[in-house]
Every structure is written in C-alpha cells, then in structure tokens.
Image 1 (cartoon, helix red, strand yellow):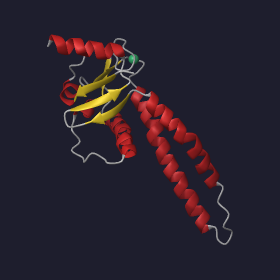
Image 2 (image 1 turned 90 degrees about the vertical axis):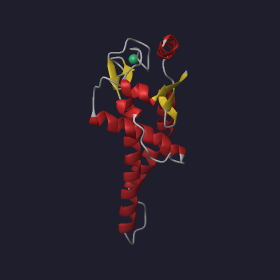
Image 3 (image 1 turned 120 degrees about the vertical axis):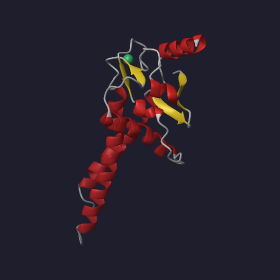
Image 4 (image 1 turned 60 degrees about the vertical axis):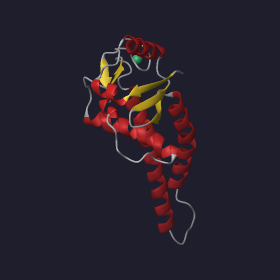
Length: 172
Ligand SMILES: [Zn+2]
C-alpha cells in the first residue's frame, strides 16, 4: 500500500492528475478541497482522536460541498468511498457512546432491582462487533496517517495516482 504526501495547497487548487486516488482509473470527480485548509486546531495528542478527526472532517466536508473543482480526484465508483466509511466509523462510535449512556441510565433508574437493563446487552454486543470491524475498516481504507501545516500523508493510495503525481512533479 503506497504512502503519498499531498501538499495542502495542491488539494486546495485542484492541480492533481485526473487519476482516482483509490483505484487508479480515470477520475471524473474531485472532492474534499476543505482538507487543503489548515484547521488551526491543536494537533490532538490521542491517536484515536486524531484518527477520528480525519473521518469527522470527511463527513463535515461531504455535507458542506459535494462536487468541487479542486480537491482529491476520484473515479465514479469511488466518489463516495470516504463518505461511506466515515458514516460507518463516526456513526458506530456515536451509537456506542449513546447505547452505553442509555443503558447505564436505565439500569440506575431501575432500583431496587439492580440487574442490568437489556439495553446493556445491545451496547455490549455492538461493542464486540464494532471495535474489531472499525479497526479492519480503518486499516484497510485509503486513509490519512499524518498531517502537518503544509501537507497530509495518506496510506493506501493507488500506485497509478502516486506515479502520475511523481511524473507531474518531475516535469514541473
Ligand atoms: Zn476509483
């Protein structure tokens, strides 16, 4: 899985080759030009929060703007690739937190019978299913692995995108 570092100003100005970032086919879409902006937020110390913040930005970006002239190139099939994964990952964490909270509240309110409320079972089953699935989906995805003020580094980009980008940079 090739790693590639994308400059934020190139994400913002849309000067990437028209090659799908995920599979290397011809790209007809460009999305997520917001990733070119510097958030100005403090880099989160916790790796899990840093990782979730990438998926959260994808969701936020997909809601504010669908297609744009700039951003990262995707083919027809992959234009929704990051958005589908982001929904699963962010949605899964939200459901986990919500189901845990509800089951704790219901159990506490059911005095004097202190047996765990049945919603606890759902929360635990979801936890057991979601945590490993989340890790697999995240690690198998083309995803951001590092970022700084100038650039974002991705793992799992298509080889053809990486070589097209290198050719473009060499000839520039
Ligand atoms: Zn593709």
